Length: 233
Image 1: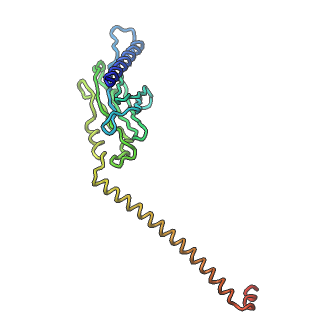
Image 2: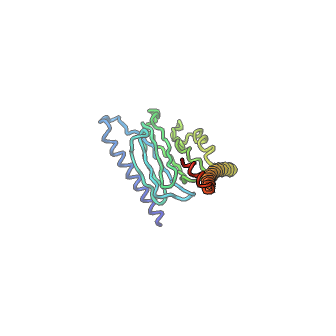
């Protein structure tokens, strides 16, 4: 029942944001009877971690990658919804404490003019990965994990070629994990052996210097008094 209530609230919030956006756009339009409100992409997403809905994450939408448009905090079901007016490109970032910060791109800036009156829906699921996850190449997330593009008809879709290239070696298989671990262990052992050798060499040198000093002192103590005086002179 609570899940159903949350879903209804999310839908009402989404409808409210959509109506508010259309209302605000109406004031920016010229008083031309033939003028039409620009179309927009309805972007619907669900955040997950370990195949479970993720709450507490932050979704930030930027126009042209730099101008912050909206910040969304998805609820317990991990779902969020936003509306992207055609005519500019968007960067959407996803962040959660302890997880890799990610982003995707949505390209609507070069949509054909005759298609500007569309209102398509794009749905996706975004998995989160911990920053210390050894099975993921986290450095790949410096780039967008997908690019959403116009399909040339009536919808938006992932750029399949880009997505395939991004995910091709994203997951590190067990064999490679074992190899990387062996390389890491060997490197750490080599560094430890080197440090141990340096510490031993330093200790041996200090011990030799101490023994040499003791030997000189012992030899000096065994000399006749007259010889000591000559050495002091």
